Length: 446
Image (cartoon, rainbow, N blue to C red; front, side, top):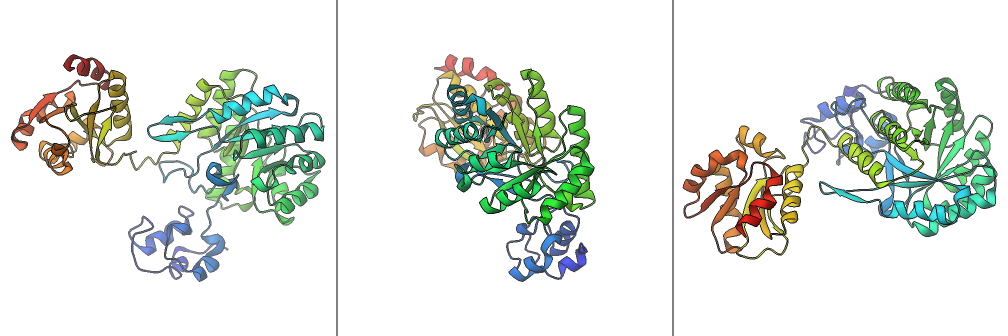
């Protein structure tokens, strides 16, 4: 039975240290009772408290980890329906499917695509996370050979074994049992055999059923067989069914604390048409799928999907920020121009990118404005002449450059006069309003 907030509060440290992100221990206890926080957020919780609270403190959706090492990925542990309620915690996994019949060159191309899928977007490294080896005709030897090819060709990349034939799964998992793979899938017919393999190999197990009622029954059955790390497939393949099923599953887990559906969801978004596949995967990303299997991972497709995922799983209450500092762009010398912007990640990376495109080495002063853009920070009184002057003075940049010229964004040209008063001896130059004007602006000064 779930504990109330007051009952949970009795087992907390009662220090009101705010380390959990909440003002008091009682407020944190109320969030735990509402399944809107995890006990892990309290660094001072005793082992006895963790043991006593048990499921009451656990997230409504179980966390599952695939793979090992620095490429391991975690899904689940979500505590809300909508990201603006709190945030979404563990980004969904994108996996490319490699059929057993693609052994050899075709598989090698997909493996290579995964290995070179990483992109850098606003300072974060994004990539295809996993590879799903799929069985087609029950040829266990061919299936196992592709699994081995994946293990050898993409070390560390999490693996999903897709077959409903226990013997085929056993043949494949022989090559990756120590890699913490995901087995897909246990059904009503093979549940005992699949559960046995998952327990012996300490692997996560996906369960597949046709409809939510059958999925619930199968979840309870496999759980009773001793497998805790489950992933759900309700059989939804059409987008409208995916939205319906996944929303019901998420609501049941979070709003009703319905344990049989309190697990991550796997979605098969593969389509013959690449655009349709991308759209299906996008819906899965936005509507609660934790693992999404794709037929192919073309660069244009993954740029769109990885960017969408990054946006969905960014905390909407905390703007993305970079550290306050004076950054060197290119081979900047003591005579190179000095510019300033805010520490909103998007502003920083756009400005830096345009400076790099100009091929003119420069210094970029990034001021902490709590992650706000230039105009927003100015309007909020966080990007004022006084604060800019204090930052430039305290940064010690005068010891790095020989000149005393500061280029400010064109949108805050109004600050130029006040800045010259606040920074005696400095020349304040107004730069372009938009970042894309920086290359021509800088080249014109060179």
